[in-house]
Amino acid sequence: MARPVITEPGVWTMDEATYHADPVKGGSLSYSGAKKLLAEGGPELFAYEREHPPEPSKEMELGTAAHKLVLGVGAELHEVKFDNYNTKAARQDRDEARARGAVPLLTHQMETVKAMAARLREHKWAMRLLSQGGQPEMSAFWQDPDTGLWWRCRWDKMPEPDPRRVPVLGDYKTTDKGGAAPAKFSRAIADFRYYMQASVYTAGYNAVFGDRIGGPALFSLIAQERVAPYRVAVYELHPNALAKGREDAARAMAIYRECTENGEWPGYEPEPQLLDLPYWAYKEWDYS
Image 1: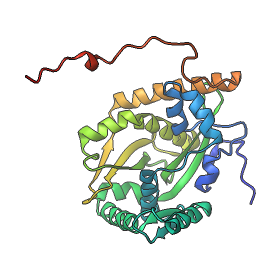
Image 2 (image 1 turned 180 degrees about the horizontal axis):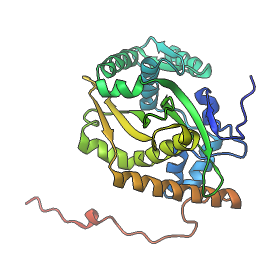
Image 3 (image 1 turned 60 degrees about the vertical axis):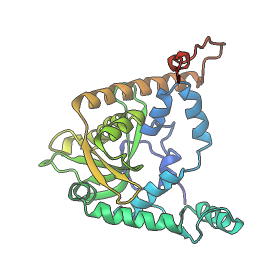
């Protein structure tokens, strides 16, 4: 089946593979791509991974599986009925599942994601965001008002536009034990630039549905730990964080435009650099 070629702003139903392959004519920038561009030496990594997508991590596959069980859409979940991938049979089963687009999960991982989904369904605010009227896993495409270049995003759940309501976009994240606690999750928001994701995702909704909603879209993060009892927390972002997200998104788009126009995607500094030791390496410890 032929993949769509996006030439006009709008919202599309498509699978993850089509979305990540970037169906926009001439290319587009996503939040995950913007993160790479802002990292030191990031443009080179962005350009490389655009042509050589990395394999999903175990954590990413668990998150994808939990999405599937809660939202009811997404890739097939395939149980690899082994305790680990130490045997050839287990690895072959895993690889065959991935080859057909399924998410492979060892038996204990399948049990984990089922427990995570059950716990998530018990959380009132999380389910209010994930079960609100609308469609799950929708992909949006729009043009940046300053550069004319394209953005894209994929919402976990797209609220139906309604002129009587302000839409709230909920995005689901999984984390390690204790990672959903406010102090730790605030660090994750900074490390993974979730505040920039809030800017990109709401900008997309506003661009596509701006004349059909009761006000600019809002954004909430749903954090769930991957370790029992699979605790859940819901967070909104401070206005200062949202402002920082808009600044970072604009900076990433400026880098994307420059690299696209020049056809150059720089990495680390090409010339030798002088490095000092980190401050702690000079500290003398006295154990006497």
